[in-house]
Length: 134
Image 1 (spheres, rainbow, N blue to C red):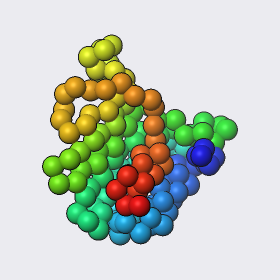
Image 2 (cartoon, one colour):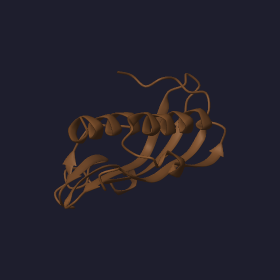
Image 3 (cartoon, rainbow, N blue to C red):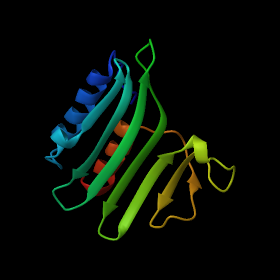
Image 4 (tube, rainbow, N blue to C red):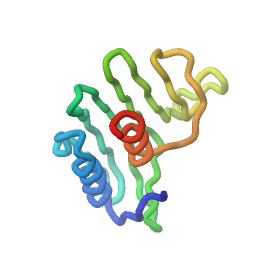
């Protein structure tokens, strides 16, 4: 399933809020903050609390291209429940091939980092819902 096209950072922010509200698993959709740089670029961030006590902290640097595609040059999605966690990171400034890939995931511990594909809020949030709330 592909992400819809967006014209502005505000449209994308509203989309993220709606995804959380419609899930029924968190009432924190108002905690999702927008820090605009321009009409089509900025940061979206939040710490969402799920009804079962789990948390999702995320920070996305967003730029929307003229075709409406969302580009995320930097992001972090950190999901935690009890003692388990996973975190998707895209940190190109810290990239060292094999040791610290630009796009990577941590599972249960900080090391090792596993190379992964570039992702986004919709994919990570759907993954959480399917794995933990279906």
